[in-house]
Length: 265
Length: 257
Image 1 (cartoon, rainbow over the protein chains, first blue to last red):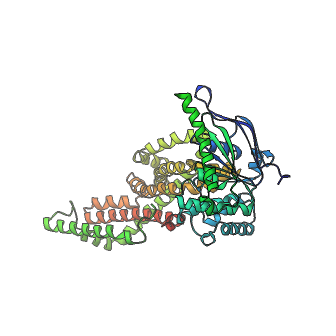
Image 2: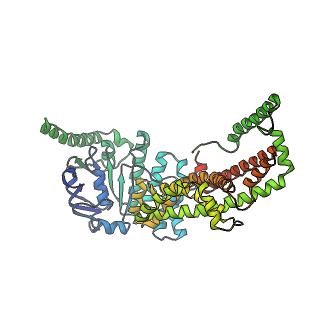
Image 3: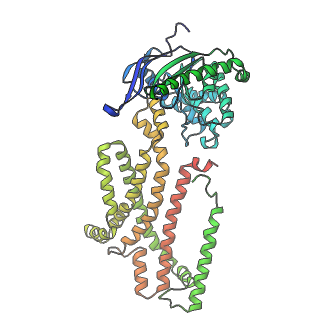
């Protein structure tokens, strides 16, 4: 792991939307390194720029300042080389394609042969437990199942980095916890690094090795919290260490807002 | 649209209503002793359909061919223009007002002009009129469908480093299909109406329009109504064909329960 370049390396990243008086500073002074294979969550209140930061890494948003490297290359190069897979809050499946064809899409766009594509897509559907649904249309699937298809699709090209923008945000609590456990299992099988945007503290703590706490106006990183829970299983959710870590993240989130309130009052 | 009436079960209410309506009509004409030139009995109309079905069919075929050719040309023109407008900004600026102008053309006024442009034995003027009637609904609806892309799909395709034409093929075109078919449904009925109307302004003496005129001129009112019935049937046939094409082209809309 030490030989590999970091999955993500951000240096002094800033992003400004608009110009002049109407400009908002969405991100400022962001320094962050995500090691290969590491699971990092970005958490913070709405408007703290966590989704924007993810999009800078994905080269969907260009930073106004600073540099973003993915696998040691520029974010743009990494996007063109398909070095990352991405999943959004909406599954974003193409309703006219079957589940299998949706997973095949990124492979088809980059010239994989028909047989290879099919084999890989079936393998991925097995990984996310949807082998029996290969021929279904997305609209026949529940929200959680659609999201699993989206994750399979994101993994199609065996990316070293998985970017996820609140992928479980629209799911009910029970489905959500099951999906989290599922995601950790999938990640341990693929050894991809993950940058995971969420606004749920338990979700961030349960999934991550490191939680990045962000604060709005201007969007910036306020705390980096290491989470040491060891092996994750359902029992961990009820352990003292889990609650201690949740408290730590909550304090970090609250700490900033307390300061902000003092400043305004 | 999803989970809408499945199969034939949705067919019964209009059929029952239709039969009831025709029965009430028959009863009304008989009971009030209405003159045939005001309103003939449905049974008299159907008698005429039976007696002159050869001539009616021939007329319907002639009108139907004009409508079909005009519809096909209008679809090609409408979809082609929408594709260009959705890809090239400057063409969009030029085409959209032009399309609105085309929609505002009173086709009734245009037909005599076309008739003088082409020879009086030509079917071209009628087909042109249909084309114009078809173009606008197809162009506007298809363009609307091509323009809107879900943000999540746009970001996804961008993350795949897909170019505009790939995005067009993989996302925009299939996503625009429901919009195109909305346009087609409007256009299919409009094509038949335009084809019939265009027949009233001189030129060839074939088709449903001239047949209605000559029947009415000969005081054969039930026959005139019989031909009107054929025109309605032709319009319905076009509309149903459009619906059928929609279902065949978009199986995913049916499978979702």
